[in-house]
Image (cartoon, rainbow, N blue to C red; front, side, top):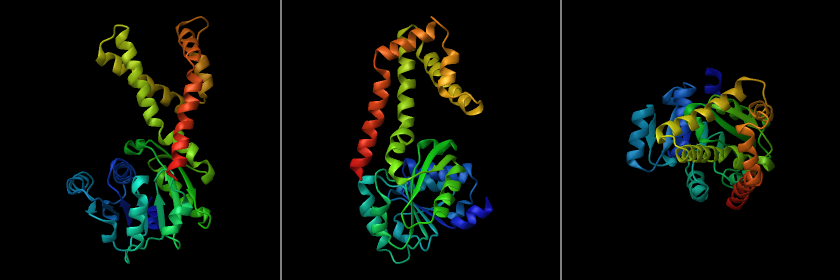
Length: 272
């Protein structure tokens, strides 16, 4: 841990929104990094105060105020990425060794256009970083050493799971794991609502739906079962689960899942 923290040095997180906070929480609460090594640039005064009070980190209004960080994580929305990157590139004392971007759809080539002399790494995390259970994919720019990507994998693995992929795969990964928490949250919402429609009270239905998702994920994580094997094990012939699965198939569930991931992937490509 100390060796990794030493290699990363002072970490400048640009953007203190939800994903920025998820990374802060993962570093400080999950990975137990020294808060003194994390500096956050966030324009909102109330938000800066909140992050400082809750995580013990230093906050500034703009990234240009951070002097000589070794690592920079750009946790800003794709729509504002170029403006933020241009301002940082023009700041004389903002000269990190590596630039890590979590902006969906912004290619490493685009990032290198602003930071041509830096190691450039893209990460697609998800919000489960907040509870040290994130799923992150990592890719490196063409002229950035693989070891830099492996270092970032080690960093984000402290907050869940991380894996190194080719950049050509990152939009698909964004559509699957980056947006994925929203898909599962919607499923929990709809299961709970369906339970209420069948006579359960709202609190009980919400508990059953949420815990079933949690338990299924843990079962897949802690056993050797694949998702297919678990589905087959739970599905008794001519039972209640089979009836439900047949209804899902008849309703076009498989095509729906294909379509939603494809739509998210297209949007990631458009943002590029």
